[in-house]
Amino acid sequence: MSQVVTNWSKSSWKNFPARQQPNWPDQAALKAVLAELATLPPLVFAGECRDLKNLLAKAVTGKAFMLQGGDCAEDFSRITGPAIRENLKVLLQMAIVLSYAGQVPVIKVGRMAGQFAKPRSADLEKVGEAELPSYRGDMVNRIEFTPEGRIPDPRNIMKGYNMATATMNLLRGFTGGGFGSLQRVQAWNQEFVAASPMGRSYERMAKRIEQAIQFMQTIGIPTDTAALNQTTLYTSHEALLLGYEEAMTRIDSTEGGWYDCSAHMLWIGERTRQVDGAHVEFLRGVLNPLGVKIGPKYDLDDIRRLIERLNPDNEPGRITLITRFGMNKVEKLLPPLLRAMKAEGRHIVWSCDPMHANTYTADTGHKTRNFNDILSEITCFFEAHWSEGTYPGGLHFEMTGENVTECTGGARNIDAQQLASNYLTSCDPRLNAEQSLEVAFQVAEMIRNV
Ligand code: PEP
Ligand code: CO
Image 1 (cartoon, protein in one colour):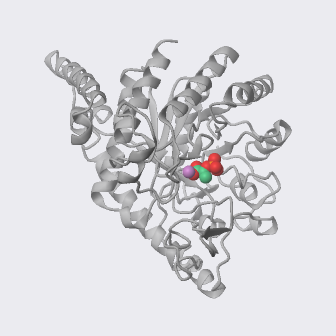
Image 2: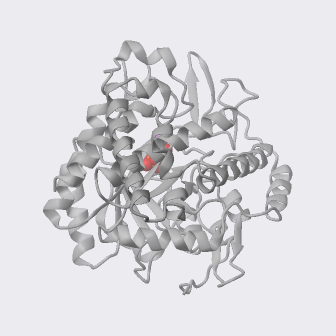
């Protein structure tokens, strides 16, 4: 059943103020790219978006848990087979740790196959005396600090679509074709992780899963089932570039209703979630599951209006509120929000983004986050839910399968001096594979001990 959306069209957002849109100098080229995109195949299907929404509905009442993660900004130069495979492996590892050790079904959602556009706090970036437009993601301009590099070029939108398509194709191959099989849990461990304490904990858990599967085979329970041998990874990104999202929006040929077919789930960022803004106008009309980021400056009435606008029918699974308050503020800011939504009977998937409000600049000049701060925010998030009688529904991470040094701390205790050794991100600092696995084990422990 699709909800009825009134006074909306896929271009009605144009009547509302749109923040964080690039100044495309060549409007004719932009128009041509978007017109072509509108004729190209969708990246996802409406039925898949509905499946995800149904799964998320379970996370509303604690019967499932969403793990959402990937790069802050995907980088065209790193869209390669091995990089996609390594990112997928870490997500699969985290998910299996959460579902095996934490005993909760996990919904896997990548910040992948389309996370190419970034909102920025400042329109301009200054390096020494030089000032240039900020980098806004590979779908817009380039990270190189040169006047040419920073010009928004609509050809990047088409390239982004193609990159997302190639990523999606490989992900579908991996998850449907046996790579995501539970009989391969051991093989997801990466060499550089396997040698670490975290990797060894993972090996032990993988061995137990292997034994459980062998036992099933021994007693004659079929193990050639899809539940064991296939997995599903949904995709998501911030719906920032409204022209692109509009071009990817199609009507569902089976049940009717509009879906933004650029990803299964779209979220609205902290900087673009104005109730009367273009992003909210656009997303209210598509039937995908939606995320909304909420930072420490939120106003409760504003959130109420936002939810009413995006989910007037209070459909479970439609809205995920992704709170990002920071480890010092979460204890104070989360409970009133939980209480209000509970009192009003709102069906919400509550997810915690422990990354975005725990960012600081190290003495070395690197933008970083500390592992313990991330863990603290997660701990406070769980504690708040347990004391309010609401359900922690998910976690949202910036992470990578690469062995980067972007966040400090963790089992190897990366310090500020080490950040430079493999700092690769084109935007925010990500947890590396080992730190990601460590978080998963810690969270599983928290969930299990309730
Ligand atoms: C992000 O998720 O990369 C981001 C920009 O988040 P937020 O909108 O919460 O700042
Ligand atoms: Co980010």
